[in-house]
Image (cartoon, rainbow, N blue to C red; front, side, top):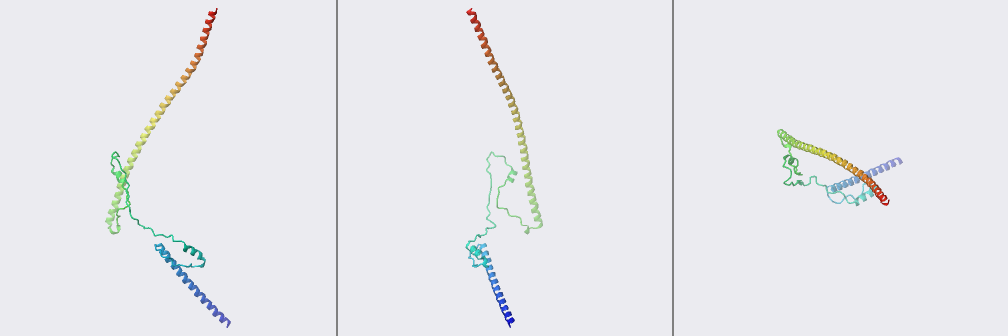
Length: 224
């Protein structure tokens, strides 16, 4: 009898536990669904108030309160295709500027953000696609040819500039040689002037001594 009562009691407790677990699972599922809908509305720009008022677990109660009191930082999604704007960069050249160059104009085209309509291969035949690719390759070849010509002209200009620089360096070297020669001449003249000055000082002393001797001889002759 006691075993039967124990078995009934155990079965009752098991049913109660299963019922509570099922109810808890339903509540958690409902809460998660509510939070998902709330996040989805916030992501798509809907400012409707959140319907979730309680956390899924008691351990997350403080975090849930703190998250509920913090304003949402989600903003409206930015458009993927902004309004196109056309921008043109041009330089104003005076009448005295360099001569007109079609290759230069082709390379320095005004910039534009508005692209031309592209070719749609889905509505074209194989021959049209082949012709289009041939045209694109021909245009690229033309651009490369013009670019090569421009690079060749730049190379020639750089060679001319290098030759002019070499000529300027040669002139500077020649000028340095002339300056060194003139400096040597000036140094020699300065040394000559120094020696002449020293000699003139010595000759003045000798002339003074000779003059004093002559005066002394004259005085001796007169006194006798």
